[in-house]
Length: 229
Image 1 (cartoon, rainbow, N blue to C red):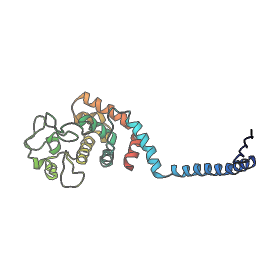
Image 2: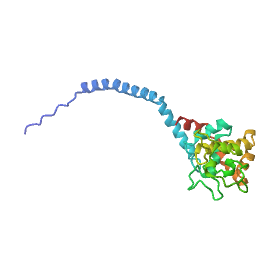
Image 3: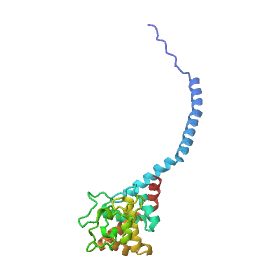
Image 4: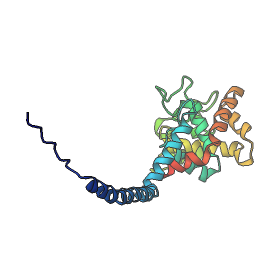
């Protein structure tokens, strides 16, 4: 019987050794290139944004209800205008309307808008119809008129300069709350007094302070991400 011819290997040992020697520097070059490319990518601004975003999400997960990122710049702008910490404004917003997620922004007793102002507080208690809890009988067109509000000494603010001071507009509502809290005592460091003036309830004061103390712990981190958005 004839012996089968043994197949010659495709690559001889010498060729294999040559390829190994050749591929080692190529692999090292690719590794070094990939490493330094990654270092460059990490320094790009959008990578910082994603890193900050992750930190932001981790912080928000500690709260029972996340602070909507789009509201933070509004709180911060009001803080700059009236000196009321943005975290305190966020706490009021959380307690009053769960960051405006309630089914209606009008309470059973007549408080209106994102931060729940009684019409007489917003327009001014000097209005002839104001008494009792402060619902009043103020014509709708007068409720948002900056000139009427100025006349009767209300806290309503036209924050966005559109000629209307509207408690159902988030900017106007937050700025109005900041104005109230500032004058009620915050500008003098009397936080409890100011919060109590906003809503005459000890439980309310404790609720607002609870969220304020949570938020202020992460003041700068939250603000950093929100203002870069």
